[in-house]
Length: 462
Image 1 (cartoon, rainbow, N blue to C red):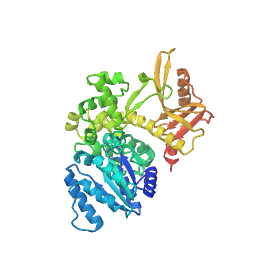
Image 2: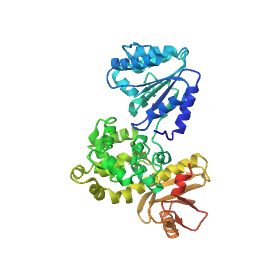
Image 3: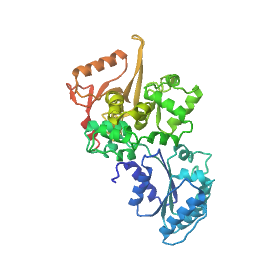
Image 4: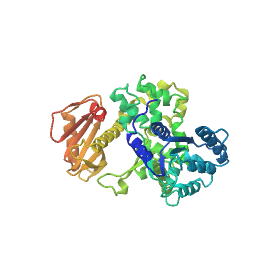
């Protein structure tokens, strides 16, 4: 299978391999985000000797036996046997005194759960061999909370990790490389559900329609990704029922803490705060404050930050009985089709537009670099209304407000003027107005307008 994206991470690991001294890299991120494939890809590119071992959820002795086989094959010396992983690792560290070597330990959190004190074992080995060994050690894992804990002061490995990579989902542009056969419109639709997770995107068949892909992978009973969300969350969260309640409230559009509490059946504010903190920590929920009032907790909102999770709790989880008695096509038509096209995809389009702006800002293609991007909250005491604008940037000249329209008709002067009038009535402070359009524009050029269509969104970064 072809390897897409991850240019920055490949460069970081290449630099890590080029270090003259002993060094340790930590790579972590949620399941399915492509950590193992990234490691295998860079290992294939490196000219150094290398050993890759994926830990098992069995026992220390069983892991030692499995590693023994790999080490025997690597050295071409039959019959090497280690009783414990400590002995196996010690042998690797010693070998690398004379021969530069990369050792990649994948799913390290599994080993950590079955091998008591393995962090301390590694700490002792690192301290003993750091001045003599030429080892490049990679520790990789999917249980975000555990892997991130290796960086904390109370962990034996604190201060001993040279390179840290938190592997996030790919952006909309790199994700689209998995399904080049789709139109730009359908690329937006696919990203709205499968996001930037390489494993999900590798399952997409761009010879089928978006609807057919959704039905095949998610909607029909027994679909390949039918239980994916619950499987992933159960590996990270112990109190699963509370998480379900929170996701259902978020899927309905409730984002404020008080609204989530009242809509869910979570028993108390402390219990809800605990669940939200955990969901934010593992990267499936984001906590967002308006860029013009960042310290105001009352205006802070919570949003599902994983597209597949958002789709699942909006369209699949609430309707188990209906799915069991209806055909997949009828179920899609009744419970998904219209809301997906008119609400779900347009909301995801806003996220794509935000990612586009960040990308061009990083590569210097914005007229004035911005230093903030996000939601903008406003109060209108005259009309007694308040609300948010979802995509707003702030640069040295002030704010630029963007409106994203995922509609089948072009944006014309009437739409532009109406939106600008709405902004002025709200009393917001901005010096330019931006518009993203799925279907292009019929607008007279103006100095205070920024107009961006789908071709530019998917073409500028190519």
